[in-house]
Length: 65
Length: 262
Image 1 (tube, rainbow over the protein chains, first blue to last red):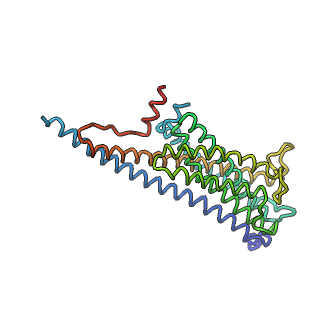
Image 2: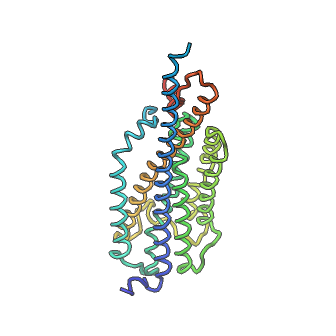
Image 3: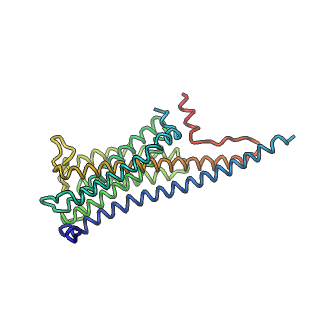
């Protein structure tokens, strides 16, 4: 087992490159998913605000002289 | 062709694709890791350090693949003003930059034990570093303008001019003396890598490619949301300034529909 991890004495280099690659690819995925969720929330909020503002105005419109 | 460039069509087409691509990414990389770390032999000269190849070569491949994709999208954005082409180019840049950086880092970690140095200023390594700077320059440039239209024009031009670096990277090992080994997979007389090493390499390359497409779909959606937010914010400001007029929400489709009807 320890033979497997030492990788013929090159363990640091080999596991280092696997660790860095895993960290970078997962970090990019997590960062993308997080900003995707935030952008979805912000878009929906803006849409709701504009929708309510518009429907309020449309209700008032017929009463105007 | 223009039909597919509509964001709503893009969402409809990629929605069923996303779970399959994610599953394929996970399976291919898991299988690739198994063969790379357990079920493949060490090199007769390099011992176990050859296992770094299963990350280094796919990362390098993706770095070049993403750049070609970005340059093609840049061209389509300049010529046909595809809104989705520009979005795809912007979405690709950070993914390609990540892979290029990973290629340089894993190459360095491979070079230290085998060449005895982390870094040499030779053709392959330097042209790969330039590729990374092209990505970073593109990202900085497209985000430097308040008007996304101008940013995309400048960025597309940079991506196209920088594409000249792609064949330089590929052929640098033939054109100049270098520490880096020559091509051993894509060459005229077939690959010189042993089949037991080709399998994990192929699995990892396919896995990384699927990962790219998953990330591309996610990042295009992010970009579409951000454009929608910008459009909504603009229309909100309109509403406040002229409450009497009915201003329709400009959508990211609007400009494109006008063009498609030509």
